[in-house]
Length: 255
Image (cartoon, rainbow, N blue to C red):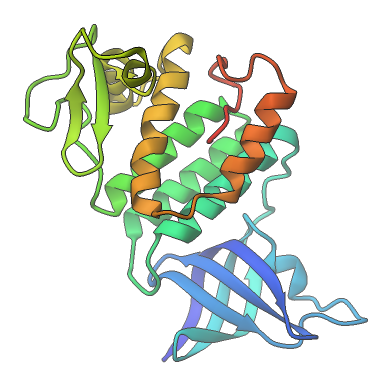
């Protein structure tokens, strides 16, 4: 099968053998696609190299043979966001999470749109932690494992004054008042879940707990192997006192 002028976002690219690259792309029509780009590395810089950088929006031609498709041509559609510092780490997290959870060769139109939206929020410098929480929500929804964020797993409306643990298989579960501090620290406030449901940025004090609750859900779907970006962001937080409390614009460990 041949793909012609297929839109896609580059998630990851790495060298393969002496002159080639393996590239992972989130495409509009075929979901995550693995591409083999032959002859793009070497002493002379190949013109395709510039179009195969993470975050780049491209149109590409490829011929599918087995699990990987052979890249024939690619061109950049726009200029990729130029990011630095926390925003750069946030983009790495975005790409790694998508790479790990999006299935290959399964069309994910909603995920493609969600990724494009998150990419533009990174470019615009929107509050980083909130940008990532919104993308996590949209990713889970697109993959069919998200929740009805305005109600718990039993269909009861979320109480903004309560706390909820996010059960990956059931949905939000309300915590009882006598639960331990450890359980409560890993639970999101009802206020934050309702903000997520309404796409309204939560209050600053709710953001860290929402991040921890979402991470537990993502870890369930990722399996025993976590994300490199979680390790990197945890190291960053240790070097930046106050990151754990976090304002809505501050990246927190675990995304």
